[in-house]
Image 1 (tube, rainbow, N blue to C red):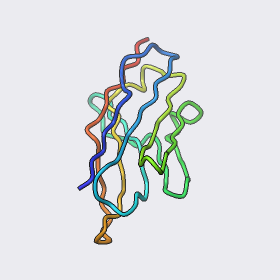
Image 2: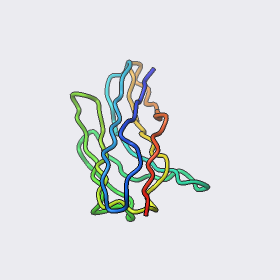
Image 3: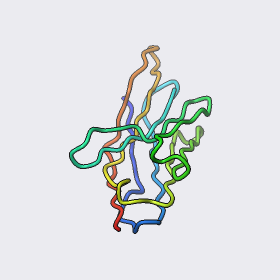
Amino acid sequence: QVQLVESGGGLVQAGGSLRLSCAASGSFSSIIAMNWYRQAPGKQREVVARRTDGGGTNYADSVKGRFTISRDNDKNTVYLQMDSLKPEYGGVYYCNAYVRVYSGREINYWGQGTQVTVSS
């Protein structure tokens, strides 16, 4: 079993910054990718940023130039630096990890989510 624990959410004024963290723990052989998703009220969950084990990244068009995803492989932790925040970036941010367990299976895991609120 793999656990993802997010932290760093909160209330911030428009134009401000937040840094989200997500630490993976448990029993697994490797992490293939770690990603961040956002779910705004009344909307579907959508991908915000992705990072592969090889270091490749991609971002939703709406956050390009404002958000940066990074990963500390030694700590099995992914970060999301969010700058120049806008109210429409608010919502629950979920960490997602695509993990290879020791049996060879590849499994998708989700964190519990962390709330981000951006006031105007």
